Image (tube, rainbow, N blue to C red):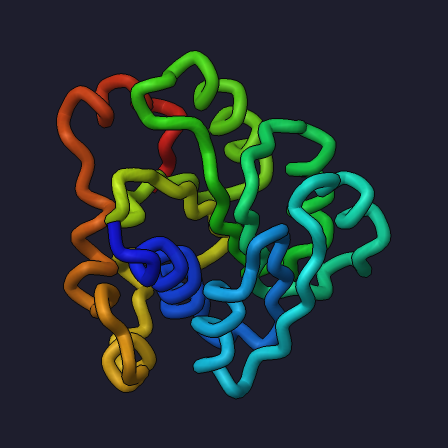
Length: 184
């Protein structure tokens, strides 16, 4: 699989969903490709923390200080999720890795926990065989996509505004498995 797909989908889906993402917190231990994609957003400042101990990293982040949190690591820790909600602004969103959508037993507690803090909890295909979760306090990833931002960014190899909307389409068995958990 092409190495550019996952970073483009993690970064641009979230950055083109939020109305004005000026502060981004990236939790990753291998962030070079993600930071390269984030560099396209000149109006945004990016802080990078380790993805290996999210609780320790998020504990000291100021309350309501961040527009977008990107987590390039697996976590289902309810305390970490509470900290994510605490550090996000009132219209903030998070995009994160999660277990395969085929692993309903692993995703169910994660999505329930996220549903306690976010209006919108939607899985989407990253385009490389994995899926990500976008959780938002305000913006809907298909209704609120900032088309001008997504179309004016240059240099994409995979992402575009049509892909942005299309990756949220889920097969019927996935919809059925996550009815009541996925919120859109």
